[in-house]
Length: 268
Image (cartoon, rainbow, N blue to C red):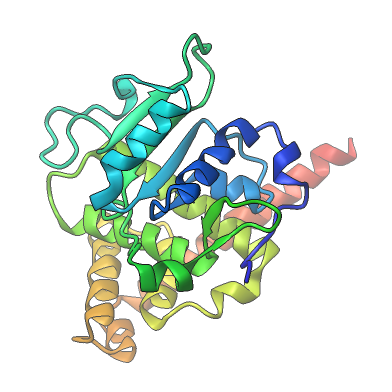
């Protein structure tokens, strides 16, 4: 059963030349799912797909590469944007394979095949049938919204708690998180009420502009709740709530002033 559906037929979209690659993997029984910007655009977010990210079961990564090469794509080096040589985790950029269409323009979107473990996605057969789905009228495989949000949160938590992560990729996950949560809050607020307790705790606090030490505490608490070694109640008790509420009020006032100013500009 589809968790969401694009407003416009995917096959008629400008991105079909990219998205149909998911069908190619599906036809070869390669466990995968679409990730990143393509999830957001299919949720009708006004983003533009700059790169198609396909999370692929680690053990089938080479098979996925073979399928992409058969479709006429060719390998290319990772964008310099994501190369961070002083990192100990993913210093050369996204793990896996980066591909592009031959003779494509510099601005054309390419394809990244990334191990599902790096996206913190369980793509075992049992999880695949429960946490992903084929978009109606196509065989493009997408993650459910809760599954995708959980994977992005897990990536953020790991990069926050473990040293040596590629900071550029960590920032990309942060961007994905904020885009997704903001969009769901506006378009599908009910979905956030269905989050598991560890993710609900994280979402309630991570969007607040907190000092690095406090933000790291949010990540640690989320991890411990997920592992079952900390209750949600005790997680909240460990947070400096008076300080957090003050910050939230300041941020709410700031946003209200911005909306008021924008309305005044629009009225002139």
